[in-house]
Image 1 (tube, rainbow, N blue to C red):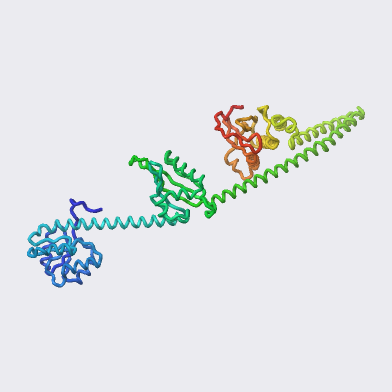
Image 2 (tube, rainbow, N blue to C red):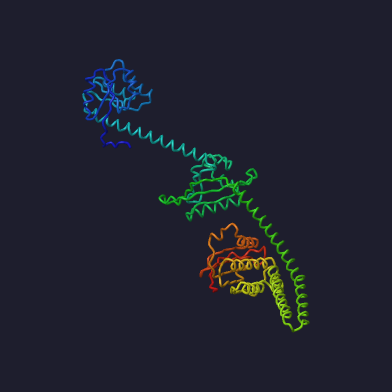
Amino acid sequence: MPLRPSEPVSALNLLILAAAAAEAAQVAARFERATYSLVTDASGLHNALRGGPWDAVLYLDALDDLSPVQAIRSFRNLSVDLPFVVIADPADGNFAGRMMRLGAHDVIFRDRMGRLAPAVEREVREARYRADQRATLAMVQNSDLRFRGLADSLPGMVFHLQRSSDGSYRFLYVSEGSERLFGIRQHQLLTSPKKFFEAFDTDDRRALETALAQSATAGTPLDWSGRLRGRSRGGRWVELRSAPKRNDDSGHGIVNWQGIATNITAVKETEAALRASREQLSELSFHLEAAREQERERIARDIHDELGSLLVRLKIEATLLTGKLPTEPPLLRDKARSIESLLDQAMAAASRVARELRPGILKEFGLPAAIESLAEDFAQHFDIACRVHCDDDLDPDPDTSLALFRIVQETLTNVAKHAHASLAVVRLKREKGGIVLELRDNGRGISEADMAKPKSFGLRGIRERVHSLSGEFAINAGEHGGTHIRLRVPERRGAEASATEETEDLQRKLF
């Protein structure tokens, strides 16, 4: 820190150029706290200046081999900034002027030696202040060089964009990455910020201006990406990230963004490739699911037509056989009736399996009736109560109906296997242009670890079905325990469900 004019300097280390040691000692004695070294010729001065450090140099006008001009020249050659004070006889009135023009900081005449100590201390303060200024300037320059080097080495463009109160923009700083990213030199952006906005496609340019205006108004961070225009850019994508800073002290509504613009073309291409891959996988999944349904329909038809017919014939033959058996002994007639009972069970099982594989009721009577039939079979087979609430006017397309039926079937199967529940509830309704399916149980619930299991194919299959229908899927803990599954799909495959904000209570009490 530089000394203030009123502060006393610390102990001085003086370099005195004089022929007589006694005279040098008398001069040094005028300072309360000072040490000194005596120099009598040019070589001694040169060595002393290289040795240092010194606070000031005093020249006694009594050296024949070392003139003041030679001393000052030595300072300049070595780039030394030291207070140089000359002590001279008052006889030569022009001497002081010549010394000051040559570079001396002050001239003290021998008849005014009382001025020596204050003058030297003043010059020492100013020299230290100059040294602090040089050190500060060097630090600023080094910091600026480091910043510019760091900014230029980043994979993008560092920028400082300012928006004035009239809505105009100007760049206060851009790094060398501007040419790599936009093909525009630094000075071009600094002098014409319009080139920056013109580098984007028309639609993206409007979106950027809107994003900047919203960021300036709301004070929210700028996180925007857009495509550069022109075929030469090759569809390059650029992302801007920055936080706005408002100059509230100025009162002029000036907003600044200091951030970075980066090339995210590779990221966008990867995202596009992932989306395309996802769509291909979805199409493949839909195709496989359709093939599975066709195979299920074939098997169900074989069970109904062939196995069912065979079981009916066996039932008829068993009944006829029972009627022809003698009543005594009763053992044979009892065995025959037992076979009839087993055949009844086999027929019922075959009918149930055929319905599960391909419910004919789904085609004949619609989705609500099929879900009610499925719930009845579930309750009878697993001894778990199952309530169903369906709107009567639902008429989705066949693919959507089948997908929703399979989702209910898979969910009820999971309830039977894992939930340890005594009650399951199914709610199917139309809501704001789409179909909402909710399934609840009062079992042990589902944890994050359960949903993250690598082999949880049931949930993944449900998600995939919902995705193929362009729907939304959520699974959460129920408000009274258990699990709550909610999904929403368009009523017709390919149509989009209404995106109106939900205002009703989704946690309707069904228990």
